[in-house]
Length: 498
Image 1 (cartoon, rainbow, N blue to C red):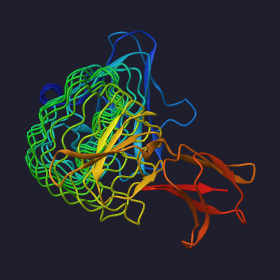
Image 2 (cartoon, rainbow, N blue to C red):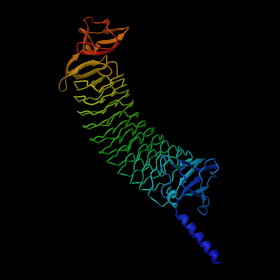
Image 3 (cartoon, rainbow, N blue to C red):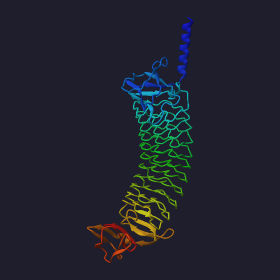
Image 4 (cartoon, rainbow, N blue to C red):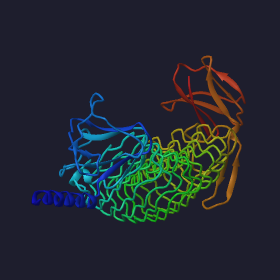
């Protein structure tokens, strides 16, 4: 009698303990569902499962040939636990993950895979749960993620490609680590992003977190005011249904902090960008390939390397560019900034008086086929590819405003061919109209041909030696040998390669 009583008491205590635990739980939503655990890199995580509410436990051995799959019918409920105090997965190339068939809803705490009961709030290692449910198209609901202190890449790609996961779990963590949420929900089916309460960020902490979440319509609040390197990089890239951006109050930026943040998303309106102190590549590709019709104000006066590089690349609905007030340039600062903005008709005024850095305007307006007006203040074209291809494929006619001192050179790297030129005073008003824009020259059939000359024409070789001089308005001219020549009429100089 005493023995039976003791066993009953023991079972009662065990049941009480099981009920107080918060096990990771899988519930079959449809018949013929199943799951198994697999390894990459011989990780060998310890996992047990129970089909009777914790009375008995069975070791879940990793599945290699389909013999270790747990089969379920609709309504079956499975508890899971593990003894992995040093982390469930160990590194990028050494992790364990679930595979599923049918439809399965997860609940309970994922931390039961660490401490066996689901009470811990601290992630113990880097890459701890990386790829845990990767490509689980059968997962319909995510488990609880109660940890408040995260580690590097701990949730990396955790729910990536979970196409039937429509609701994200709460993310209460306030202490983040580098790459902790990297690609966490990439290509998943979530429609609303979870709250992200952290105000102190870590390097790349949210990088690519929601990339290619095609159903995402609502972004979380991002309250941080001081950013870190790549913290929001590609966070909402390719989120085609995301049309409204969260507020971005940060005034302290970091390298690539907003890089590709909304690239390829459905964004129609840009958030305010109040920062006046920039960082290298901080806005690179930020709004590329979006549906923006109006750009945000860009008040910064001090530029940095690549700060606005490709920021509005291929924004085909953008009709007006922001003002660019900076007087001093930096390497690649405006590189490809408006490339392929095919509805942009007018370039922003460029007040910088000196092109001092490599590639500052490189491809800036390339393929902006409707741009018909450009106004600059610099007086020299520079020598380090500053304007290479910057006006390639703009409108065939237009007006180029510049100081009188700027050499009138026509090319995809200089003034667009076929455009008129108007000089500006040192200030604002137009001083003089220059009609030489009708002058054209090209190489064909072993000769240099020119038309539309209004003044004597001179041909120079690359060493600056005068080769020919003509007075005719149009003519085809033989030159001594093949090579590159400069054909000049008045103040207009054209480069020709024979």
